[in-house]
Amino acid sequence: RQFQEHKHECCSLSANMHKRDLFLSSSWDDTIKLWSLTQPTSLRTFPGHTYCVYQAVWNPGAFDVFLSASGDTTVRIWDLRHQGPTVTLPAHAYEVLTADWC
Image (cartoon, rainbow, N blue to C red; front, side, top):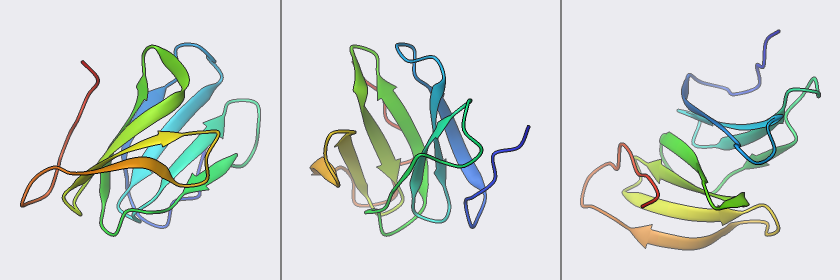
């Protein structure tokens, strides 16, 4: 099966450990997509970054929260219950290639 909607290369995948049919993909097209293994198309697209999204990672303690690391120098925290990012952190002077939950 193929999951193909990003306009450019995919940079990362992150499986949701609480809802095992859900996963995230991040891409050079500046977006993050939410997918279900049971659906033929993505469930939702998360725009907001202004440059490549190198990584999206689910929060291990909250099934509906994830973070993203981007070439736009920010780390953003997202909640599925909201339309946009709930927190935007200016992280570095240059690209943020990776981030993780502590």
